[in-house]
Image 1: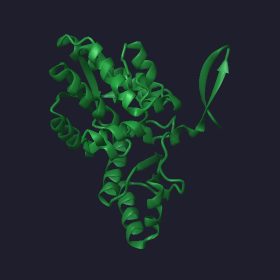
Image 2 (image 1 turned 120 degrees about the vertical axis):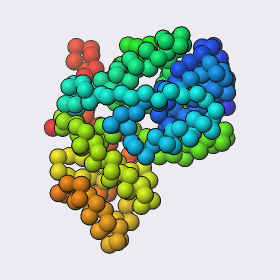
Image 3 (image 1 turned 30 degrees about the vertical axis):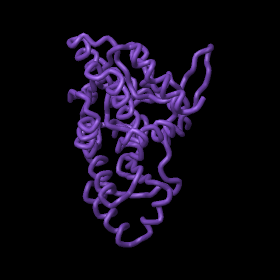
Image 4 (image 1 turned 90 degrees about the vertical axis):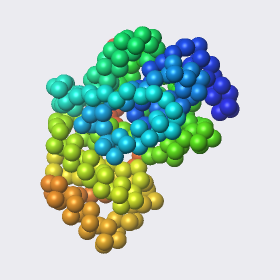
Length: 282
């Protein structure tokens, strides 16, 4: 089906819902969903922006600016998934606990304002990656209209550009907890280290940045075409000095560059007694 047909399906889905609360992060998908929901439903579309130590600090002002450009109402809330021990220990289903916390708080807001539909920006491509947070969405009755309309990330970018959204070519956005290998505890100081170095790399002009943290080692991912910049002494020495000052002992650059779900490459999926199990490769 052509992208225009999928776009029409999305608008029909939202129109049928009548009113929605959008889990809004300011990323490509949720900004597009909030824009279309606002266009279709007006004030019956409402965004909730959740901030926490796992939310990249550089994204906060941008998310507010995008919502203002759309003209949509948003409410800013705070979540603290770090209070949940099962999240802090960083198991392979870590995202389940994060999403459960997020949508519990969003549901409270929706109920207080008598909104009956909660939606998130999961897209059709997300079906191809390991996403334990989808279980929390299912449990709490969250719908994913972009996924229902079978819209891919590339199509969402294309439509976003046509709608004049500044997010159309925005880097992929993921919470900072995704920077840690499964099994390494997550705490606020480690999150701060990751946030600071990613902001620093962003200010140097890098794109699609991931500061992968493992104990005292930092592994940097950026867009593949930018990897060669690290071989310039000026850039290399600046990054080394910043990372060392934060407490990292070893700093490496991933020669493959950024790719979605790279931390999941250590996982494998098996079926046991008919059930899907996700396990860590050794």
